[in-house]
Length: 199
Ligand code: PCA
Image (cartoon, rainbow, N blue to C red; front, top):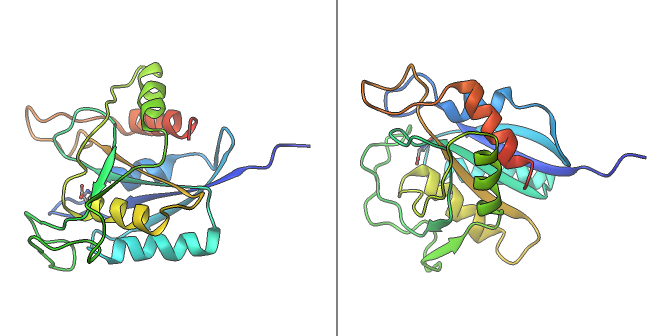
């Protein structure tokens, strides 16, 4: 008999900020249905404050996953970066895909300042590095929609068995201007596969 599979909900965002692709969703789309002990369910989510987390929560209510891993684009980064922490702050330098541009607004009114991710971020970095791909911990997911999703999910699942994590990925080569780092899609997918294998 085969081992029962862990259920992993994995998400990527739609394009934002004038881009025509978002590497997070492109990489998630290419992942296999199963990685190690995990069976994957993929969901695209909108780059919109509040609505992004609501979309993840609607999917997770249905699936009841063991692990939720959200992937997002972080243009300018050179490697795969699991996020260590989500903070209770919305502060946008550019409008989201619904035109929202909050400043100094909490994600959750009266929520704690921050939550640590509950996936094994250090093991994930090691697994990606062992696969020969650049990865490092990130101590800030920013204050835009990615952080919004990470904080919202960590708040929602605080004290439960459901693990929550977020991984930022670099631009794809076709997005990056000169002297801006980028990563090929196949490498991103291989990196996410390695990271998921230890989740
Ligand atoms: N990156 C943005 C939001 C959507 C995405 O892919 C962020 O880092 O907040």
